[in-house]
Image 1 (tube, rainbow, N blue to C red):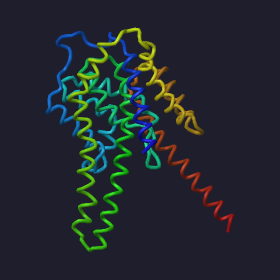
Image 2 (image 1 turned 45 degrees about the vertical axis):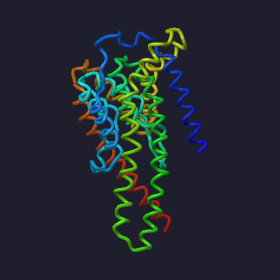
Image 3 (image 1 turned 30 degrees about the horizontal axis):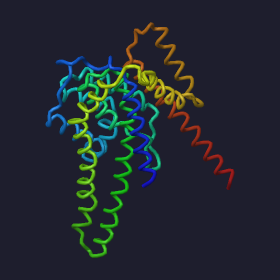
Image 4 (image 1 turned 180 degrees about the vertical axis):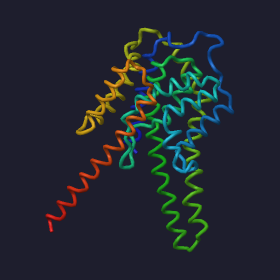
Length: 296
């Protein structure tokens, strides 16, 4: 409980500092450039975030709707500007290139950053730097939702155990799929719906009322954050036998003067990756078999 409270307070301080740091120039001038989010649009955005967490897409929600790039595109379609939505989502996605969720914990929530961050950027007509500066603390708030989900789901596990002892198969089934999904819907849909419906006005009003010079330097963080995501991804690339493939892709693009599209390079990379896994896997399997035979 104390850890969760400290996390909420910390995220609140970060969000407040970043809102202070974003200069007024990143906001739209008072007029017709801002987008008013209707109740239906806010509901669709909230439902999209719920689907990114739920099982209804047969597990594909994690690989699609959970990604800020896809979330940005869908939010852009909902709000009528798919182009900017995709660009904002792609910028947010760069931050999470090195994202790893292991051991039942997450360092941040890319989905929440994508759905809510893109909504704030489009509805408030923020530039990309401001959108990124707001997306990071929003993503950290997603860890609170995740912890609430994991903690709340334990209640349904114990409830199912009790009903199993009573041979109440119907309640056991509902405790496995119905009740957890109702709970998940409440803790995902409701916060995003409220943020999309009321958060835009709240954030833009605060930003418009602040002086430009107050902690203005932190606004630069919006441009630095994607570089951090790329650096984290590079850290995984520069390991062992995969390093040559990085330089091969780089020089292939340079030598062809960019005449090869990214799709063509991606296909070449996919073929090389398949060959690498095939041959390296065979070599490692052979070494393991030899070690096992020597052990006997």
